[in-house]
Length: 277
Image 1 (cartoon, one colour):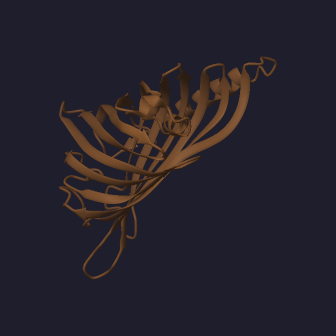
Image 2 (tube, rainbow, N blue to C red):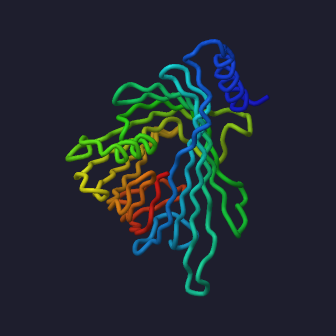
């Protein structure tokens, strides 16, 4: 059995074993899902790396909470991002898709949370061959923390509750990861990363009835086997057009810097629609 697969099984088994004490009234079965989906179009820019030109991008992320014990929650995040090229000879051509699978434990404080995760991500080409070396994937152990408004589920709660902290305020989070390496084929393929740090800075302008504007600054830094550091920095403006049980926004995203050769978005600007649910 491979190291990556063994770690996942042990992680899930530990959570289920912990949850087996059904006599404790702090234990709850949740099965609650929340998430985010986007559909955007690139309006300018050309990435440094990539076989096809930019066109459209669609994202889907679903986080399912399974079990909680007091302030501890076991949840599972699944996500997919699809890139679609726009070419002169054809309106659209499927480019690539990025999958994410992440079981995690979350501990909630009054205004913040901490997380421990097993992070799996893979990138596959669409409508064309993968190439001689195949697709790219990686597995990592990640730990993170942040204020609640930097995470989608709590972000929706803040708007639904008309939280006054949404006025002229910040939310932040940060994650650090250690990439698993070895001879087992399921651990990784076609990458040299050892560690990474990713973070979000979110600024809320204010809340006026059901509408507001918030700005996100996303940062991601990778450290590879050769001691090289690469980074990606992007900014996004969201105008909330609906905020009831769900939140809908119109967004503009610009990638200031992207040195990552995988799914590169350097200099791209995009506009689109985003839904938090």
